[in-house]
Amino acid sequence: MNVILFIKWKVRVKLYFKYLLSKKSDFYKNHINSKRKIVVALAADYGNLGDVAITYAQTKFLREKFPDAEVIDFPISKTFTEMKSLKRIIGPEDIITIVGGGNTGDMYDDIEFCRQFVIKQFPNNRIICFPQTIDFSETAIGRKALEKAIKVYGRHKKLSLAAREENSFNKFSQLFINNKVVMAPDIVLSLDETELAVSREGITFVLRADGEKSISESAQKELIEKVSANYSVRFNDTHINKSKMTVKERKNELDTIWNVFKKSELVITDRLHGMIFCAITNTPCIAINNSNKKVAGVYNAWLKDSQTIRVMENFNVDEALQLIQELLEKDATRISKLVSTDNFNDLITLLKE
Image 1: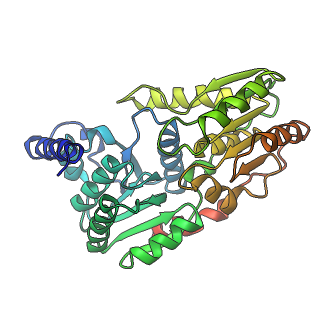
Image 2: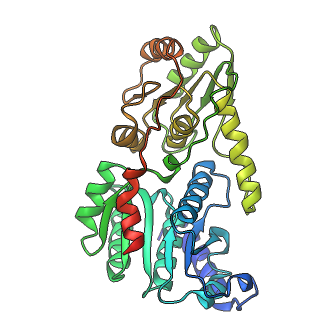
Image 3: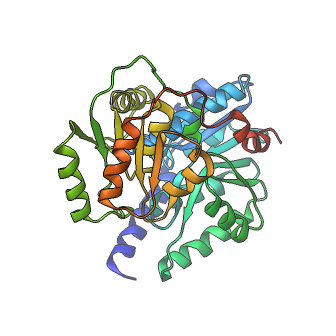
């Protein structure tokens, strides 16, 4: 066992002991009632605003579709310390949903560890994993992690999986043969945050600096220099340095980042939710595909009919500059919503079964 794996193992042992040593608290005393409950497990209270937006959209979606149910936000930071309290109020007819995203795999294995823990805690409840991208690496660690996921998921007789693009749908269907699999848009695409009367100015860059980055540093530098020579530019990110945020704090951060998008003439991004935030705020966008191709996957599945969003699967500076000109000349007034409510029907069916 190498040093990194050993450290991760120690952290997970500590988390499990936190669960074993935790006591039933009053954390969910306000939820002890006769209403049917739908849990949003692993609710993102950390600084990835893409995941925070998924949590917000998923909760809103469930409350709108199931107005008679009580939808419970269960933060990922409380997964081990408050699980006993949650289990205390969950009955056999209640539903566990797990937040969607791009963390089914070994790149974000801490979240995958939490997801499998939640699945094990509710063996008799229906569990629906909201639309995800699957990404297990072709390494010894990735293959071992995939084998474990197949075992844990497959043992649960009422676990269903939703994929948010075709590649993940095919992989889920091929690998997780004991689980029901459907395809639906990233749940953030159920939102509409447009403000048609807003004044827009300049170009905003929202670029990664992690393992999913695909554009080279030299190409990124050249692009920024050439764009800055002709346009007003600003820099932003969908990651902030915060953790254990309250529901109110999360919504405030979303409003802040969405306002940045709404006031931009164009956004250039290699983040999936950079592109999706453009879609829901009706902001022109050049989206650069990331390392695991989820940006292009979601675009091709749900956004390819957009007149103001373009994806670059193979980045080229000159092509990007040409696209900027083309998009800035277009009328950004949106005639209709890009993603129809009907696109979520399979997901709704899973919840109503």
